[in-house]
Image (cartoon, helix red, strand yellow):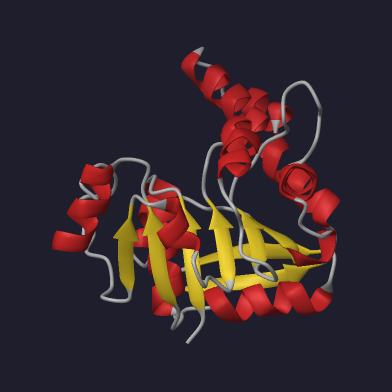
Length: 213
C-alpha cells in the first residue's frame, strides 16, 4: 500500500485525499490548525471544508508536518500557489519521494510555474515532480461524481506512478509529459473563468461569453 501525505487540508486537498484512499493508498492529511486535524481524526470529516463528506478510514490526519512527512512515498502539495515557496522552506521532504503539486498558478515576482518552484525551493529533481490539473471541482470529486484529470511529469514513469496512485472507480487520471503546457493551461483557465464570470455578471449573452473563452 502506497503511503501518501497530502500537505494542506483545504477543499481540494481533502477531496484528493479521498481519491487517493479510494485508489488504495494509505493517506495522511496534514492540516495547518490542530483543531482541524483533531476533527478529521475523531470524526473522519473535515470540520472546515466539505464537512458533510465522510472520509475513508485510510485517511488519517495530523498538524505536525514532521510526523506527516515521515515515510511518505508520495507528497502532495495542496497549498495556495503564492504560499508554496514559503511552505517548502519550513518542510523537509522525504528523500526519493514523488512530489506532486495541486496548485494552479504562476508565482508572482518570478513567473515560475509550481513545478519549477518545487525544484528550486525544495531541491527536488525535475524527474520526481508531477502536477495534477484539469476540471477539478473539489465538491463533485468528493461526492464521487465521475471526473477526469491530467497528471503530468517530465518523466513518463513518474506520471504513470502518480496515475496508479490516484486512479479510483470515479476519478480517471490521464498521463502527459507536457508539464509546461499543462501548468500554463491550468493557470490560464482561472483567468478565463474570472473573465467569464464578470461577463455573465454584466449581463452579456452567449456570443460575448464564447468570445472571451
